[in-house]
Structures are given as structure tokens and as C-alpha cells.
Amino acid sequence: MSTAQSETQKRIVEQLNYGEKTEKRSTWEAWSFRVVGERKVEVTNESYGFEKEEHQYVVEVEDRGGLFVPDTCECPADEYNEGYDCKHKVALAQVGGPVVLGAAMAYSSEKEAEEPELVADGGVSVEAEADHSDERPDDCDCGEWNQGLGLCCWPCYRDGFEAPAEVSDE
Image (cartoon, one colour):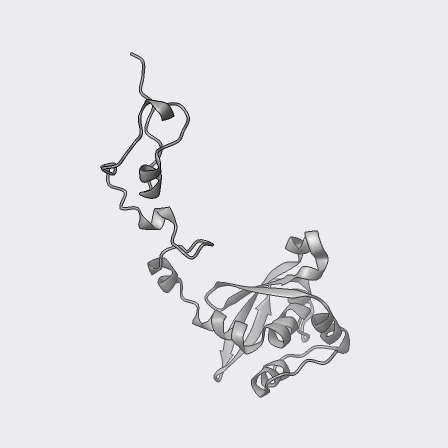
């Protein structure tokens, strides 16, 4: 199997020092990438199946004159094998390429704090929408039906309210 690489991707890979075995493993194994911080990408070796979480490492990215290149990895191979880059960095360069590396460089924790949390259906989370005032909605239907159940009516749930406190019998 051969992979077509862009010129930028080739230049990124050329910045790394690795052997034939590392190159084969980085192209044969299944990888996933997740930007986890500014200049940081979590690289997961999906080939390990249900044990993949034991094969996740964070790779830091650096800007080398406008070329974004994997720099350091927290895996033991990168830490103790001086002079050679680990398969996680090579996979990030070869498989993730300029798109993932660019996303890591563009990540901003300040921007993340400003944006509301998105949920799977494309909306925003209830907590992000809620104004958290003490006034329940006008159409609140909380009453005796939900006492002790830890539930609230739909209008209260929609607006981010917790279930009403239990009414004591005293």
C-alpha cells in the first residue's frame, strides 16, 4: 500500500529521524489523533483494540520556520531512545499530516473558554444555556408528583434547573 503525500507532508516527515521498522509500524498500524491542548496532540494506536488507552501518548508540536513538526512525545521510546523519533511522532507526521498539526498549532484555550459546549445533536448543553437565576420558568410543573424522585418538570430541566428540594413533612 502506498500513500500519496503532499509536498508539505514530505517536508514534515523529512524533519524526523527514524528507521525502517518505525516507518512500517507507523503506516501499518491504525491511528487516531485528538488535539488536547495548545500545540499538543493525543496520538492513539487503535491497533491495540480494547487496550488502546494504554497506547495513547501526547505529542508536542513545534513551529520550525512555518513548518509544524512533531517535537516530543511522552512515550518511553521517545524519552529513552535519543537520536531517533518514536512511531507516534512519525504517525502524526505521516498519517495526521499538516491538517492535524495545524489544528494543534491553532488551538487556543482562551477561545475554548468563550464558546459554549456543543452536544451530539448540534445544540448546546443545558448548562451553557442556563442563566441559573433562582426563578423557575412560568410554565414550571414541579409539584408533589416529583418529590423525592430527584426529577424536575420539562420546563425546569430545559432551563437548567435541578430537581426541587424535598418538602419536609414537619
